Length: 572
Image (cartoon, rainbow, N blue to C red; front, side):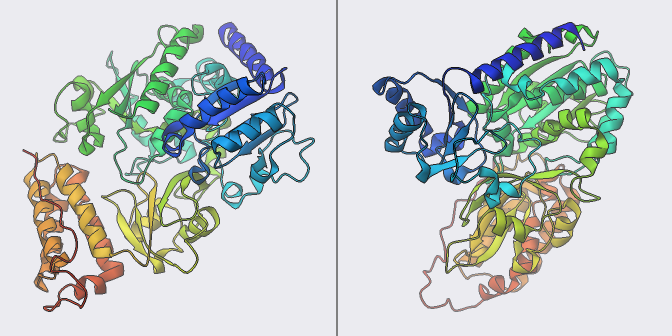
């Protein structure tokens, strides 16, 4: 162990001991985007005011989201000695009680309390444990292991939980080739949508002898219903930074970029601050930890452009150009950012790497399925009791995730349709809910896991209108560079407009199929190549709903417009 790293870990251990077993309670308020939306800023202020009102001395920190979005705002209290309790759906009145009775008097407000997983629970008899909640019991938290647990602005808290240990191991006990072999052995596949084997992708870049090589992280994350990339960055940005440095080491690269959509202020600021702290502690820059390996990293922003998430369009944006996909070949491993050899991965993909390097590829491979190792971070939204961000092992069925983790839908309703993998993914009907969370099985079922978003719809959802909304999104977000995507999305949207107004003809269903096939074969990037997926999957599971729209006479009670029609727009 290097002297610099030993000093870091000693300081980290002291910091954690001080926080969890010091003289004062430690109060953590769940923040992040979901917490803010639920009012966590007001609760944070209320906690500070209550500490003054009741003359209670305590440390107060903002942390990221625990993933249980349906319980936001969340407050948890660690008393001297280590007992930790968290509270969900906290109001200002409950915050006052927590400070007065728990932080000030040591007596939890049991009506809202849960003992925290893995923490000391002495004196908390009768208080249920977090790990007993079905939505928590089903999880295997690897990439999200620190979410809601540590202050994302404190590098010592990350180091106290093994942070940067994988980097120290790689730099001083492994060659770059050995680090790359562990990633290959893990079976890790990209979590950004394509599910390409990560180790194989890295091996395209590693042999290059170019003096300048780049590794890039994609956090454009524009998919409706997906928020796990941002969830990791706003909760535990150092796990990404460590993963990127390891990526650089394994591929002999010397520079990295974290690419985030402009406007996501919380993850942007958390990541920038974490990068600064990594430089301060000698974990980025020249001669990292005295190892002789050098690696620099910065955050790059893009505007509101969905197609900027395509790897070559992302590179164009970093270079200050318009986000338009490039023609391939050449591929990024040969000529990427500034025409230098480059590699790009998703936030979730890189967040797994520290644990893979530290624990070994076989450990990761033992989780999940043979073809889809590890875990999936799914975001449940829509008509579901417990919306949130959950990390579950690959191989769980979709139905198990919906019922055990998400809690199902409201009584008296049933789940009718799932929209998965973003607007370029697809929809699934009830007969496919027993399909496993597995890249290949979901693809065979007509949908993709993609970025992990699963939007749940009950029987009130009009599938044709849902598909029309997805295609409208794709049509508007097309960059317009290649005409199969630009015109194909426009024509498909016009056809769906006719269906929604009960003006379509039977031949229009075949027309959409021909349009989709042309888009798949002729489009420059995945935006057009996958653009027919929503329609194709909906026809597979809900064809009758489309055929009903072919009636000449509208059903009683329908307006002449059928449903709200959004304007068709094509960007220049």
